[in-house]
Image (tube, rainbow, N blue to C red; front, side):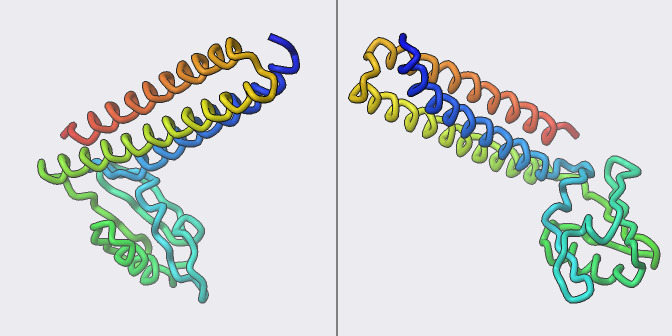
Length: 191
């Protein structure tokens, strides 16, 4: 293994691992948004509110708090925004029915039915499989790049060693996806 071979191989491995890290970050973010019958700050990430002629994220016009496991309280910085906040929540199609007392907007998170829980688990598994496909595609791309390097002076032995390294990285990230998925399924199915 020469220094020259290492210089050629390292960027390929780094790029592959970087893509896999991004896939894990993406699935973790998606799982944060899945409502499991409990209040979660990320549940309202998709809510846009009309504020002074522009659509802005909810967290830019109000403070969001979770005082109870199934309650979200939104306190607008400008009380005149309450109607716009309610409208934004309804337009986001999250299945919430906001109510206000003129000072704050309250969202009561409904308890999930068994059928809804099963549908959420199905969606979580689908997201898991999509993430695994992304990880495997990163492996495939890296292996393809490693194969091309044999034409540029990298030995076949070195290529094979690096392919094994890529497989170990892939296995590690697949296990991480499985762990995130199992944890999310458990959270969803827990009443």
